[in-house]
Amino acid sequence: MTQISRDDVHYLAQLSNLQLADGEADSLGRDLANILGYIEQLSSLDTEGVEPTYQVTDLQNVWRKDEKDNYGLERESLLRLAPESQDEQVKVPKVL
Image (cartoon, rainbow, N blue to C red; front, side, top):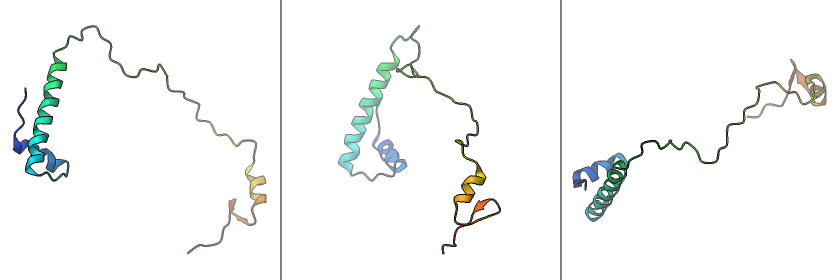
């Protein structure tokens, strides 16, 4: 099993912006050592011939063409609906 020193735990806590009491550091050190031991155990498994799993739903990205769609509306007809327009834009009152 991997040994995690108290200094390592305090260094990780500092990187994570956590403040730990001494009892918490000891407990967290044991937990981290157990996690690293489990990871070491997993790395000993034979994965020869096992395909990596990138996703499990068999869904694929659905892409659409990047095309302009005006939804059957023309700029001029929309500008006519605005109370006031200027330079082919809707003119709105200043808000300060």
